Each structure stands twice: as C-alpha cells, then as structure tokens.
Image (cartoon, rainbow, N blue to C red):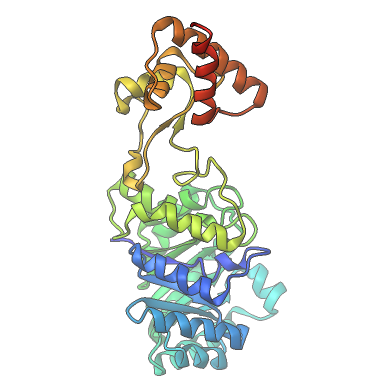
Length: 373
C-alpha cells in the first residue's frame, strides 16, 4: 500500500500569493482526513507564534491523524515540533554540491554531523524522523546513500527524495529511486515539483521503483509550477496500477474546490479529473459514440470521482447530440426539427464563442419550432 503524505498545508501554502487562515487550514485538514488522507505535513513551527497556534489547532481537531512538521536541523525548531505534539518531523537539508557550496557554504562532513545530532535529539523527544533531502535530484547518489545510512543509525525512519527544481523525467526518476531503494535501509518518500509538467508522472515512476510514501498537494499547489497533484496521483495509482491508497476518490471534487477557494486560485475548467469540463462532450463523433456505448469514449468512469458525463451543444455537435440534449430537457424532435435546431445552435456557439445553456436552448427551440405553427 502506498501512503500519501499530503503537504498542501505546508508546501502548497508556499505558492506565491497564497495564505490560508487558521480556520481554513483546520477545515482543509479535516476534509483531507475525511477523504482518507491520514498523513499530513501541516506547517513550519519556526515561522512563529501564529503558525504554531494553527498547528496546535489542527492537532486538537484531528487527534488520530499522523501530522508532520518541517524543520531545519536546529534543536530549537525540533523542540517546538515536539511541544506541538507532532508525530513526525521532516528535517530538511540541502544535499547537492551546488546548494552545499553556494547556499549553506559548508562541507558534506559538516552536514552529516549536523544531521546526526538533529536526528538523535528529535528521537529523544519521541518524534519520528524523515530526512528531507533538498535538491536530491542534483545530488551525488553516493552522498544520498551515505546520508541515509548515517540517518538510519541515528534513528531516522524515512528519506524524502526531493526533486526540488522539477528537473527529472519519469525514466530518470525510476532509475534513481530503484538504485536508492536497494542501497540503503530507509523508506523513501518522493517529493516532486512540476516545472516540466511531470510531477505526477515522476511520482508514479518513483512508486513503481519502490518509494513507499508520496508527497502531494491538492490541485498541485506549490512553489513555482507547483507539486504533484493529490487527485492525479491517487486516481492514477488506482486506475492504472490497481495500487490502493485508502483514499475516497469521490471526495476529490469538493476538496479541490475548497482548496481552490481558500487559495484564491480558480480551477481551470479543463483541470484533469476535477475541472468543470473534463467530462463534458460536444464533438458529434464523440457524443454519438457515448450515446451508443459509454465505453467507446470513456477511459475513466466519472462515477469513480462522484461525477458524470455531460453533453453540450455547439459548433461541433451532430444530429444525435441535438436529439439527446433536447430530450434531456423535455423536448422530442423529429428529423426536420433536429436539422433546423442544429443549424441554429451552431450559429449561436460560433457567434458567442460558448455553449448555450439549457434555458437558452429552450428559447432557441421556441424560436425555431414556434415558426412551424
């Protein structure tokens, strides 16, 4: 079983311009848990009093959830996480030579000692530890293995492989995670960014290669281009690989809408799985096929997500679609009427650059059919 460790409330909120209120964070965390997402990365204690109060509110509202905080390898930050009764901390450290030299200006030896001390301290406070390997996709594999072995000996249980800059493709991801899984003792958590539009695909590749945990965010929120999208990863795992996560897919539309509203980021109408139009059909060839047998143009049953197919009329509609849509709104058409209404509907869609609503279709029918009497 793959475990989703959703980071909407931490990395998702790091999206430029996004800021969740305490009430929104508690509500979204509750919705995630209700959907079956029981592992949540909920914030950064070092951000200050307000962040700590929010984390405490989530802990109080969700006593059974498995909550993680993000920390640097600093004892003061780790102590805060323990005082907030978090279950896990991600102790994040840069791992690429680029970041060690030009961000921290320290050696590999120094970061290993710092990490070992931080893990030992966290374990003494009862915290479970994930080693957050920032920029792992540009790091030396030998150094990542060394980090994992040192971390394991100090008491860490998990290693987060972060493609921080979103540079990987699924093939490289598979190779990296396969090698890392075989060479060290820790469970691997994959953390992908979407700079090349490959975060969800890379996450799936990592899971196929042996990663047991996956970081996601609802609707792919996150820095720059965002992170792997919860709804995409979970649905693909179940639909493509029959890998269960224990998450209820029918909760995704409401959850995604709630996150979209809280983030102030409207959902694109064609956002995979949860966009308003992703199960909407206009093309005459497709609609004809769906009317005959849904399986003709149904790769994924929308009912899995609590949704259904919708037929609309427009420039690309055919006679069968016109008959079906007007029948749905209570109007039975003969062949001549169908042809007349098809022409009128196409003209409407071309001139207004949109599909007519049911109310407008009724008006068009009255206009066309009324002229017959």
